[in-house]
Length: 469
Image 1: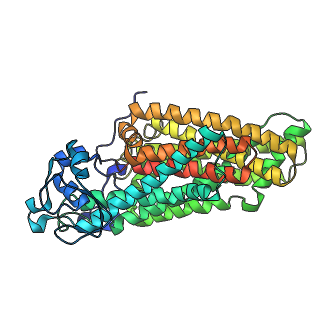
Image 2: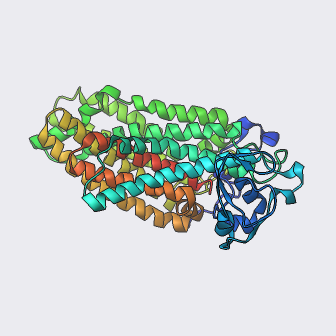
Image 3: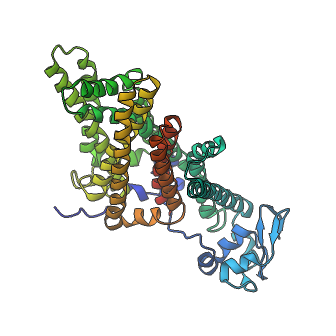
C-alpha cells in the first residue's frame, strides 16, 4: 500500500483569515518558514531586521540594543552594544544595515510590538538554554543532579514558557512582515484557542496518559503473588480518578469544535475510523474497570484485565494516529475529503501512535513506583522502578526512530523539530527525560514525576513549534 498523497489544502496549514472566513471558522495555521538567523534576515528581509532591532535610519556599523523603547527614530533607554548588529548580520562590524527610513511611513511595521515579541522569545530561549547548561555543568563536574529547588522550579516553568515563546515567535513573524493594515496583529483572536487546545492536550497526555499506562501494566503475565500484586497496584492507583481525566479530551474537542468548526469537521469526517476506535477503547476501559470488582474466579479476572489492557493500548495509539494524520498534512479541508484508511495508516501516524503508547507506559511506571514508595511497598517500588527505566529506554528509542520516519514522510515536521524553537523543545524534552531516568534510578520520585511531565509537555510544545517554523 503506497503512501497516500498529501492533501492539497491540509487542515494543519489552513491559516486564519478573519475577513474571508470569520475567526470561528478557521483552523490553526502553520506559519511560513522563517529563519531567525541575522544574516538571512538582513539579506532577504531587511525591513524585518530593522523592525526587530529598532534601526530607524540606515546605519554603518549599527549597534545592538538590548531592551529599550523605539521612539519613532531610535531606541531609547536600552543597553547599546556598538557595531554588534552589523557584525551579527554581515560578519563585518562596519557593514551598513538598512533602516526603516527606506520604507514609506505607512508601510512600516509596529516596531515596539515586534521588538517586545522578539526579545521576549529570545529571553525565554536563553533561560531555557541556561537550564541545560547548568544541568550539564553540574552533572559532568559533580556527577549528580542539581540540588537547588530553583532549578526544578525552572524546569516546571519551562513548559508554559515554551508556549509563551511560541506565541511571541508568531508576534514578531506576523507583525514584522509589513504595515499593520496589510497583516494580522501579532496575536489575533482567531489563534488564541489553539494555545488553549495545546494546553489541554498537554494535561490529557500527562494525566490520562498515566491512566492508559496503568492499564498497559495489567498485561504483566503470571499467576504468582508478585504478578498479581503488580496488576492490583496498577488497578488500585487509578481508582481515585477513574476515567475522570477524559474531561481534558472533552475540553480539547469542545474548544476545537467551537473555535475551528471547519477544521473540526474535516478532522472528524476524514479520521472517523481512528476516532471511533478511540471512543470504543474508552468505553471498553470503563466497562472492564467496573467489571473487575465483580469477577468471581481468577480466570474471569484475568480476562477482564486483558480487555482493560488492550483498550488502554488501543486508545492512545488511535489518538496518536489522529495527531499524526493532521501533522503530516493528510487531512484536507472539507467533509470526508481525505482517505478513510490511508489518512491514518501511514508511517507518521503509526510512529506517533507508538510514541503515545510508550510514553503512557513510561509515565505510569514512574508514577506507580512513586505510589509504591509512598505506601511502603518496597517490592512493588522495585518492580515499577525497573519498568520505568526500561520504558524510558524504549520510549527514547521509539522517539528517535520516529524522527527518522518523519524526516522522509513529513519533512516539514522534521525541519521544524531540527531548527529554531522546535529544536529547543526537543532538547528540553531530552534533558527532562534524562533527568527523570537519573532521578528514578536514585529513587527521587517526587522530582521524577515533575521532570517526566515536563518531557511530555516539551514534546507537545515542540509539535506546535514545528508547525510554525
